[in-house]
Amino acid sequence: MVDFQHIIETVGSFMDFAGVAIMVIGALVSIPLALRGYQPRKLPPGAEKLTVYRSYRQLLGRSILLGLELLVAADIIRTVAVTPTFESVGVLAVIVLIRTFLSFSLELEITGRWPWQKAPTQPASANT
Image 1 (cartoon, one colour):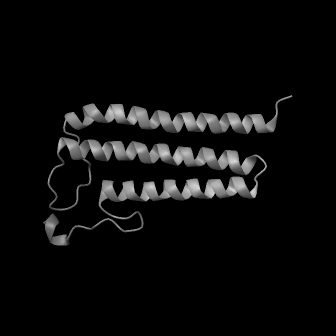
Image 2: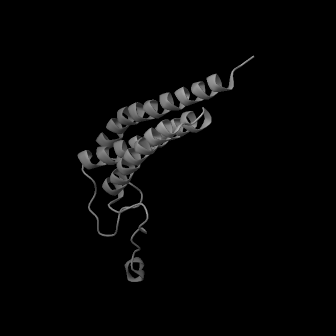
Image 3: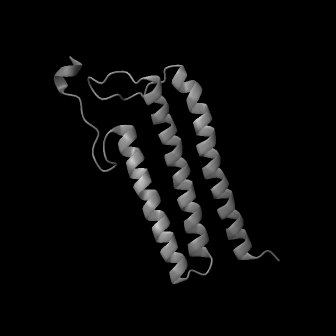
């Protein structure tokens, strides 16, 4: 008979692997995209085109953000599903806080605004 704890550990390990794989693949795929002049669809009004360096940083940041989300999910799955103790929940809280801070910092770096801020809107006269 299959043990529930073993299944949860396996799912958590798979999520860890997926998170790291997304970061590594994202880093590798971002290089040719940036070299080919990738530009985001929604540049702020009046913004200059991104340099290769800035483009790579944005692409890399997005893949890191997605990978971090999967790593946090894996930690939560393993900690909550397998007999949580105060110590394991405390460690999880610290990990989630650190990764959340990293996510917010990367979001600010990529978009130029905090996640809870609205995107700047174009003035109506700019479209005419």
